[in-house]
Amino acid sequence: MLKFREEDVLEVDHINSTVDGGKDDWKNLQLLHPHCHDEKTHIHLIKIRNNVRSDILNKLAHFWKQVYTLSRQALLNIRWKIQKPT
Image (cartoon, rainbow, N blue to C red; front, side, top):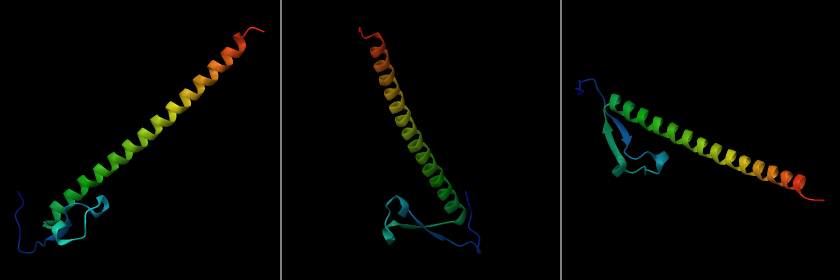
């Protein structure tokens, strides 16, 4: 548990980040000890990074699925043309 010292200051923090759609309004503000504010920000940045990674991986998976599907269709067309009786 953190203990406040006389020289400690409080920082204003957005409860719901403005990046995530939180309003810049007093109802969305809270006072935090600087260490707690840093911890909250650190956790939020990790979540953002993980969401970005997840989004990139989903896009890559979708891309390679399309490549596989198109390649498979092309191979089937070639095979059909080779095996087609003349």
